[in-house]
Structures are given as structure tokens and as C-alpha cells.
Image (cartoon, rainbow, N blue to C red; front, side, top):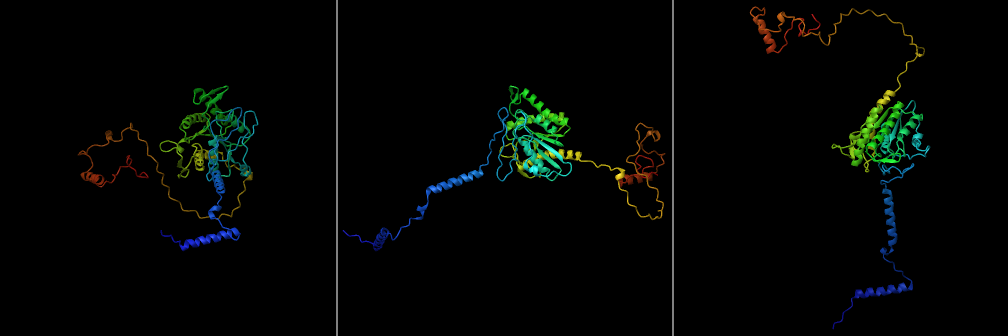
Length: 433
């Protein structure tokens, strides 16, 4: 049997390992573990978990349901407030309801810190009060941007989130309108937009009426009319803006019926109704998220919830009321006041006039030609002999053959107009001979 010879290289590595082992036991050399052994698995998992939680906290800006203030009952079922997403203006700053001042009504919305710090414009300002629900807040934002270049225009943001004409126990808009008009606040025009929270039962005493029933409609019409009449009694112009289309088809169907109620109430109160439905639908009259803005550029107009508006959408929503508001501003502009004669300064004395030579007599002016000639009655007396307008030539007529040929040549061949006798209807010479 042949013995296996040991390889010198393997023998060298064995001797080297024994030497290192002896040095380690003597404390002269400490072996170093590979780099991978220094990683703490538990620390890495903690790090990535915390990193994931931090990233999720930055991106967590979704739709959240906000609790609303309750007044003798549950909060409205329709409507919610939406948090603003980073990098995009989705919703204006909403003012929370104020503490109660009376048993059933909410106190007027106080001005925000930015509005309070803004100095009042010089001279009489044109004050526009914007009322309504969640969508009315976007309308106020759009109007504030539309009239940002006019310091004499003030926008009062009186809209309340989660309100409507149904839940008068939560917020009574007809009563709030009367209190606002009686508060002494200067209001030159009012804009109203409501309806997105009104597809719910309406309470009458201890009885609830389902939406779109006959009794529900009668009560709703009465409340809409009471709100419009409050401004008619104070002679304050009211612009009632119709609710825009929504993504939910059932909600949009109900808003179409409510818009008809708003239109009729505005007409009976002498107010102006503005329809915004066609501005936020596509060519098939369906809800659309994108559409042309006020500059004609296609952009995103609605948010992902199908109810609220982006900044461009709020600006377009306000565009539908700009024309009526500008006409009211022009009508309310102060007219120039005539000064008394005592306050009018006397003209400065002028230098003595130098006598100029009299010009030569000008020729008599040509009388102005009238726009139309005298009226010739068809039943008047005949001017020609026998009342004939035309007849063939007879041998005894004074017209010569050469004259007839000249007329035919001039009129039928050359196309030149014929010479009309003086006083005939086709005699257009001026001045008259």
C-alpha cells in the first residue's frame, strides 16, 4: 500500500496555526472577528422600523373625519373637513364654531389674525359677505384671490363648514342672516352657496321628513325663501350661487333639485342666481376632475374626495360671480359732487386780446343730405299720363331711334346707369337742381 505524502504547503499552514494558537493563549495576540460579525441585527431592525414610521408620518395627510360641535343632538351626517396635503392648497383655513352666545344660534365668526392685522383701506370699501357651507369657504377663497389687486374690496368669510338649511338646530342660516344684517356691519353685497350637506332628513318638531318628500320640499323652500327675504328687506344685493356638480351621482341628482329651489327663491326675492354646473363637467355633462381654469389652461380643479376644490378650482368657482359683483361695485361708486359757486376758484386774468382781422366771407354750406327721401304713398295720384310706368314705343313718340340705341348701348352693353330725369325716384343727384 502506497503511503500518501504530505504537501509542504499544507504542513506550513498547520504550523502557522499552531503558532498563532500559542500566541493567543499567551495573551500576545488577540484575533479580530470578521467585519460582518459587528452588525447588530436588533439595532438594524429598530432603525428601519423607526425610519419607516417617520416616512409614514410625513406622508400621512389623508381625509379625516373631524368631530363637529353638537347642539341638542348629533352632528350633521353630511359634510366633513379635509386636511391640507403638503405642496398643494386643497382647503382654506377653516374657522371652528365659536362658543355659544345664545341658546340656539352661534356667534358671528370673528376675523382671523391675518385679517385683523390687515390695515383698513382708505375711503369707503366695498364689503362682500360670503355665506354658505364647506364649498362656500372655497368660493370666499376664490373671491379673495380675484379681488386681491383691489384694496377697496373686503371679503367677509362668513361661511360655516358642515352647515346647510336642513339642520337649523345645528346652525340656522335665516336667523344668522338677520343677525348679521342687524349687527351694523357694512355689507354692500352678499354671496350664498349651500347644499352639499342638505341631503338628509329634515326635522319638524318631533317628526323627521325624508329627503325629497313633498313635506321636506315645502319646509326647505320656506327656509330658502326666508333667507333670501332677509336681504331683500334690508335692500342688500344677494347673489345665490348654485351648487356645483359632485362626483357622487346621487348627491349630484339631489343638488339639481336644490338648485331649482334656490333659483325660484332668488327670483321671488329679486336676487341674482348664478349657475356653475356647466363649468365643472366635461363634454358629456359628467363630473370631471380636470378642466380649463380662468386662463383656459387645463388643470386639476377638484380634489380626490369629489366635493371640494383645488386653488385653481376655487378661483374658477369665483369667476362666475365676478361680473355681477363688478357691476354692483360700479353702481355703488360715488358720483362726482358739484361744488358750490363760492368754492369754485375764479379764473386767472388773461392778457388783453389782440384784435384779429375778420376772415373773408365763407361760401354758403351745402345742405346736409337726408338719410332717406320723401315718402311716396302707393295709393297717391298718378304722376304720369294715364298712370303708366312703362310702355312700348309708338311711332308718334318724340324719342328718336338713335337715342334708343344709345340708351341700350349705355345701359345693357356697358352697364352704366341711366340718366334719370329731374325729380324722378331714381334721381340721386345732390344737391337738388
